[in-house]
Image (cartoon, rainbow, N blue to C red; front, side, top):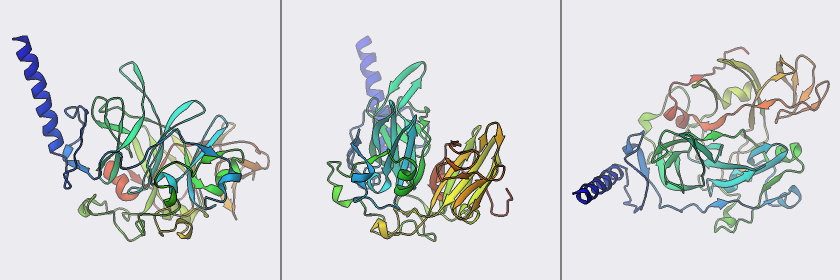
Length: 384
């Protein structure tokens, strides 16, 4: 009798799992063989769309890095990179490479990290690959699933094959459903800006051993980020686009106590510096031109300039600094010291000081609103 009960339980689990996966949109009838516990989910499975088979994006696991001297003849000085610095170790991940792989399992200063970029949402963020659940600690490695939700990348961990939403860092289906990865502070700046700030820093090698090596520096999503455009209709329903901002407007998001505020690139670009307070958090946002889009022309080096935007906590020596832009230099009003795009004071009374980066993301507006529609929007007429 016990064997019959056990067999029946297994059959029920198999049928429930099959039923869950059968609800996923799969117009190409792509075959998957998941061991994911699909009965444990926090979303409607119908929101997920199967797009490509697993392993369609070659992995970048613990890749090689090179110095500026070797890299400068292969990368464009104005192309964007994800810049990460921990305890003096600095690494750069060019979006021109990452967009063809989307994620990389890596380590910096002993911290296991996951730099990840979803071109469809222009979402470039970095997560800590360590997870603590119910007192247990896990070290995870990830891969691209081949599925999307609201046009955003879904990844999965090797350990349990739980599915994770890239934009939010949240596990949506599987053993870890409801858990969240921790963000690692990062910036999207240009190759040139990275090595000006970190001359001893390292950048992802263009020799990855991937079939995509010859495609680095090119963009398969030509004109995707046109200001008047919309996301691909096959992955995102046009009627679901939030009308508060143009769909392809780039935005910066800030979080405090589970509340969110976003700052449109078009507004930041006009102001160049924004001093603001959101909930309990004081912030300053810097803008500097000289960084191109990877989602414009087919040849990235010929693409439009969208600039670099960085976000910081402006408190130094227990004082909230107020910043302004003077030509190409950021200055604080209290001491007139000069600061660069990475938040380092390069000249003046506070030389050598570093304002602390604030964790933020860089996304298209349609994608951000799809997951966080309750977000407050910074408006151009607000004085700071």
